[in-house]
Length: 144
Image 1 (cartoon, rainbow, N blue to C red):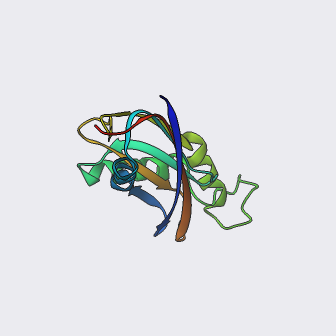
Image 2 (cartoon, helix red, strand yellow):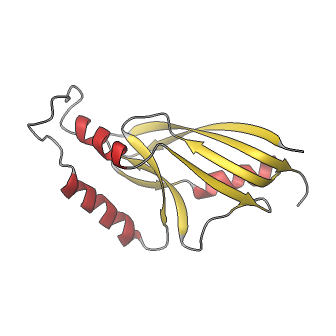
Image 3 (tube, rainbow, N blue to C red):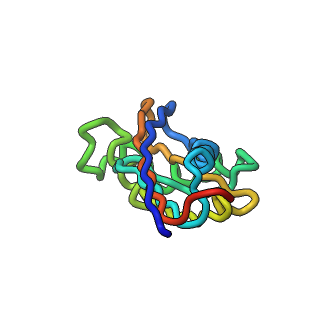
């Protein structure tokens, strides 16, 4: 029988960067007994996003950050929206280029990610933030 389960977390961060949350999500799946189905994660913010990306080599994350710095610069005088500082509009643009939600299959109680894949909150603001993450699982529960 299909079941649904929800969970929310608050993840603090130290400003712009990629913050891996794979372990926290996987722990919830195990503790809740979620077996097979689809997990949707949603970040209800307009200046942060979610990514599934390589988690083995930190140079990948550094290169992603550097690329977006070149693509979308802070403090561009053409930006009209800058009420929260020079990284305000650029954070919104970075979020627009990425995504606020991802869906991941769950198989045998585990995230069906590739060998080198991890789930990241991608913070686009420079200042420390606390981001709310919402999870929704639909599938089967029980002993694996």
